[in-house]
Length: 147
Image (cartoon, rainbow, N blue to C red; front, side, top):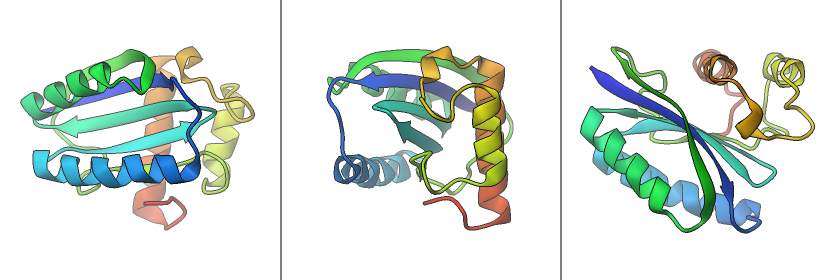
């Protein structure tokens, strides 16, 4: 059994693209060493992220994220046991939710009121699961998503 945690956070300071890529680069190295996979969405100074892998590794990583001083607020959305990894072999997929998304994902974001202004604190857990499912399908079916 694996653990999958989905959380959102608001960053204390505005981060530019270079800052986010620096975070991604370090996260991918760390996640690879821990055997953790996942996917990160970033827009409007908010993160929405799924991390998954063995229970202890994911739980420890989430505690580190909660203590990270770059976050103003961290909200746990889901904490589930699962038999399958949704983003297996992806140490940290990424989307800025701006230019690199499919029409289907864009339409879904609009349908849940998240296309123009992204605030993951207002998204329901079922909507978050569906959003990550759409990204997982996009990854497996095309090259539309930045990796």
